[in-house]
Length: 531
Image (cartoon, rainbow, N blue to C red; front, side, top):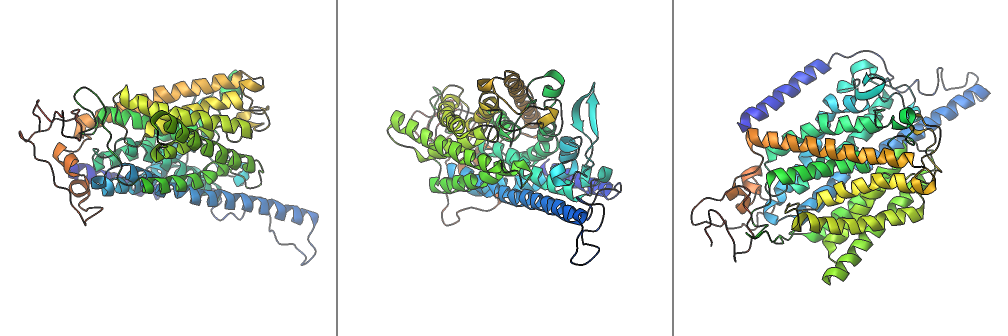
């Protein structure tokens, strides 16, 4: 079964590449025509005309934008290292190679999937971007009654004249954003998910799940049209992806954790959760620092314009919210449990960063402080609620960090946007203004967006995981989960200098999704048999 699925994926990719060889002419693959319709050099050496000077200035401005977009995208790619370290540090040593490998693999698969269909579905109807030359022919979308539902240009980065420097820069930038979404569910399903299931899930995210919703918000889709068509503020506003990137990843993380069930050893038979400590919290702290650093590029780069000086406000707000989120989470845990808890310090900082990602360009420093502080509390409360009340096992707190605080970030735009930035966004003349500054329309748009994320994001991903589980099973064998996934799934140990001894059970059988703790007292392993 596994071999057939892998062979099928390879054949499908080869077929797609064959189709993609033939493409429509058009675009500007060298960038020679950006900002000018004539040569840049002056006709008379040393005596440029005013027109020639203006042409060169325009060319230089576009060059700055291209460098800004590409440089920030390079830095955002380093997110992958941060996620790999955080997730691996928060999980057990026996699964370290499996967790690390998932974080590399999702990028490889995600890039291919986004190249094949994802980018076209998401940005194919977005139009041109003036900051990247304004020549991109991304102007073909499926529309009903004037509401854009799905982009249809840019398949294989070749169709419809998209062999263009502006389109390629946009693809690169959007791809590293999508890569964050495709990574988030791996943390929630870590230590018991099949590697092949994550491969298939990564194609699903990059080709369908993420691009469709992303197009609704960032690709000129119907959510972005709520302002121009219905008068709801500027339509849905999500500057750098609290919803598009993080909440969508968080919803998929929640669905995956629910379908796959808790790790063996996570719950006692009465439902009491048992802590399964991560094997290397310092590794997770290092990963958090890397993510924090990359977040400056993640948010500020979303101006797509190196000459938009608002990027200074964006970066500073990002710093404030992330720092406050981590500090508040640390103090909350210190007061409630007597220790500052470094793991929740990490999650608090990440929660603050997630929350500020949507409003970072539209709020002042005080509002950024409040957004981060609320996020620091929300993540602590959510982690405890998900584990203690919902009985869902999320080893790294992916849903609480990205899902809950992604939604909070979306909502905060409708509350705190101060009307000083965003004029013209989504075709609306006025700047983005929240309810505290006199506009209720923006809040309504954001609330609609939150509902769509929950219904579409959670609903579709839950159906996907249920179907995949029915077809091939997404959980590893119990004996492999107990022994560790490095050898059974990956064929290599992360730490070969020591080897864990697998536990042998009296009846030789462990039921799937059984609630049982890692400790040996009061543990039900299977069919009522105790150790």
